[in-house]
Image (cartoon, helix red, strand yellow):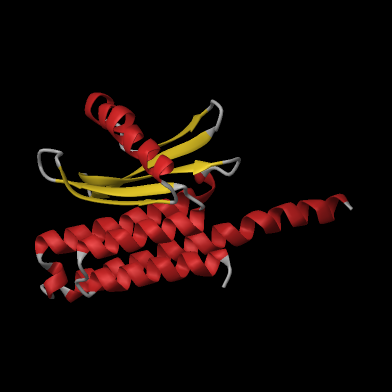
Amino acid sequence: MDKKQDKLSVISRLAISSGEGANLQETAQEAVEASAQIVGLAAASVYLWDENNEPTVNVTYGSNDESRRKLLNLESELFQALRRDKNLTGGYFSFGGEKPYHAFTVPLQHGQKLFGAMIGIQEGKRRAEIDDLFLETLSAVISLSLAADKTGLAAGVSKEIIEKARLSAVTDTAVTVNHEVNNPLTAILGNVQLI
């Protein structure tokens, strides 16, 4: 299975499980581990907050203890302060030093309500911005799962809204796959025209 199919599979699986009322902690854990593998993250976390912006759920994946510590330090020393003081919702950052790395934070929100964030770090040349659409789609699925959990939709109150959320996740996935296919084709077509 190639990377595009992996992305589609992860988004579909999470959308369906959240629509069926799956445990939010398990959904977040699966999202973190899947995104780490697909995007090539050294560490990733999902944070969910209450009305006072206090963490209620924290799910973390790390390929090693150093990467986990680095990610937790970024959250506590940088991202939290930027959210609090500058209303940061999302961003991509690159850091230099002996071992350069890249970090991101993607908001988890439903409408204008911010529920939390998905954060991660990558080491090496590859940057998370390449997978921006996938990460945003993944965060949207987690947000829908949380919104459904908080409002009782997961218990079957409104199947129409769940179906709309599923359709939205499938549409976002189709856009992601289209984006992943068109980028290489554009370069190929350009080269063919030059020849």
